[in-house]
Image (cartoon, rainbow, N blue to C red; front, side):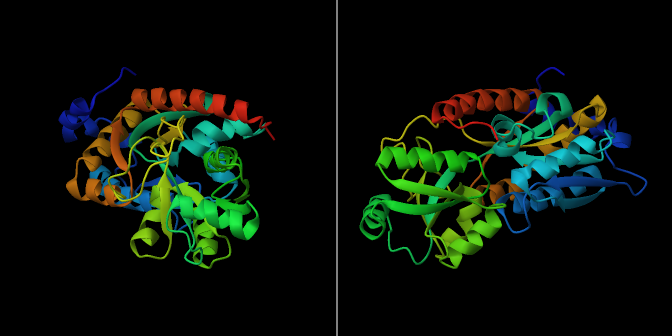
Length: 325
């Protein structure tokens, strides 16, 4: 399918989307399933439910968010592979499951290029370093000083999934600051957040959407965000780029995928519906509040973004010495 820019998506309008209706779970009481690879309560789940409501109106269909948590989204990805390619099932995911899991697992149970087809991207985001309410640090320098004083330079840092970009970021931070930081993997951001809020673990690395609501409520503190620039949702939080930590300029992304073999009309129709949903001011505002940068991508643009991000992290993982497990 040739690349389509955002103007083409919006201009296509309802008439063009109608061409894909039979394969888009629009009529006769059919249901569109949105698979989520993480538990309820986390950032991805909140985003899926927000977009599910918007897509319900655009598609005229019942939309069901189905959580298949476990293995960093691996179970949901395998469920997508097994789903019928009829346009009635999509998988909402960020970079971890699509780009990173196939690099760190010998047997992920799926090959994105072979088993999935991108149907539309909608946002980018950054990862962040946060501390629990019982941790006294209010800046990254204070955290570094604290961990050196109370733990002799050794500490644990939660991450939402094993062998994820947050886990590799913990290792990079440990090397950068000459600390013995041990990543503690969870089955998603929600259980990690629970332990952070309960002061069971002093710090965590996750996406800005994972942390932002608790940050605003004062229940935890985000000390730094990855990348060169500060984030609009957290203007007072410095970036690691400001602190001299570079090499993480490829921003993680969010998108939707369908099973390989899904009809082209369904892919195009869903992409157009997603673009219309993303044009709604209320949707854009809420995603911004969740810490996302709206970035509408056609199927071809999402595929290119996925491939570039995968190449970037393949190099980082290789340099880390990590061996696929």
